[in-house]
Amino acid sequence: MTAMTEPVHDQLSAFIDDELSEEESAFLVRRLERDTAARERLIRYSIIGAALRGELLQPDPLILRRRIQAALDGAPKAALPAQPAARAARLAPLRNRRLVRPLAGAGIAATVAVAAIGLLRYTGDTGADGTVTAPAGALTASQWREPESYVVPAQDATPRERRELPIRLTNYLVQHGQYASHLNRTAVHSNVISVNHTEMPAAPEPVIDLEEEPVQ
Amino acid sequence: MGSTKKHLADPGARPQGGSGSSDLALIKRVQQGDRSAFDLLVIKYQHKILKLVMRYVRDPSEALDVTQEAFLKAYRAAPSFRGDSAFYTWLYRIAINTAKNYLVAAGRRPSHFNLDLQDPEQQDLLSDLRELDTPEGIAQSDDIREVITKAIADLPEELRTAILLREIEGMSYEEIAQTMECPVGTVRSRIFRAREAIDKRLGPLLQ
Image (cartoon, rainbow over all chains, first blue to last red; front, top):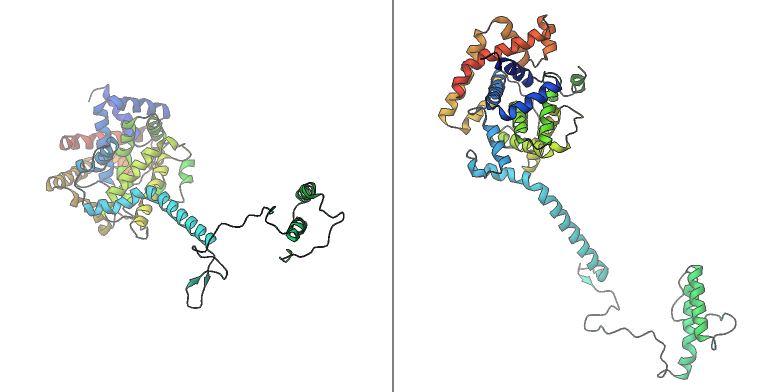
């Protein structure tokens, strides 16, 4: 050992014990980048400590370091010391969990969404025998047809229908307008009045001939 | 010793030694993309972290895998290390979480038991790593221990005491100075000379 190297070795010893100042540490770390001999000495110091504490990795004290280096280099697993397939398989869940969790979450969300849509489209009842039946009056697929237009028929209507329809429409709007906001009600009424002003009564008519019960 | 008090709740998480400046210097380099600085942290802590992981994962080969995984996680997370705690404390937490997650993923309940290296049965935990290598490797490992044990025995009393207080008891230089009633500089010198004496014998074996 030369007089030049001894201070460095002393620093290495203090460095591994975390007893160097920040400045000295930074200096030594830079030196360790290029000084292979100093690096190897540091490794031996760490081995001495591990052996004294009974922590020495057996049989290869540096097996872990080599494996970590290889992993960081992106080396294939096969290049590492033999690893039983079963052990690798056991470790796989740990590595894949980060991928599996979001996928499983997305799958569950999609399933719930499909079930909810299905439920909204088909509000069936469960019979006494446990079978699901369509509600009374529900159409089957073969019975389904385009819904009737709500446009007031102009030519095909009978004279009575022509007279009653605007009144029914007005009654409908008045009944349902009670529950709409004031602004909307005004707008709807003014629209109806402007379109049918010739047939509208001057004062609000009593509700007549309603086929539906008013909404309570 | 404010930093020591901070970690008293879990003595295992207490970094051994002094200021933490060595680790800080290394982690700063790692954050700048210096892989060799991370290698130095691995060299420094690999044994401690493996021992810690083996409190949770008893199978030695699995413990090696989990320890490796913990270091890789630490490397990937290094940019987010802010230095709020000592590096070793941070690494310690990563290792414990990795071990617990591993056990949960493998369908096992994480259980913690204290590793007492004075207990011959538990000493076998680390010795079980023997299964992983060749007879030559085992022989070399035994040689290393034998050489170090003999070198320690041959050291002058004050050097032996200093290095044992440091390595086995984990005392800082200041604590050793108080115990041995000598200046901190003397402690540093004694520990260094003890290491040099051991290294002289160990060196040829590791060539």
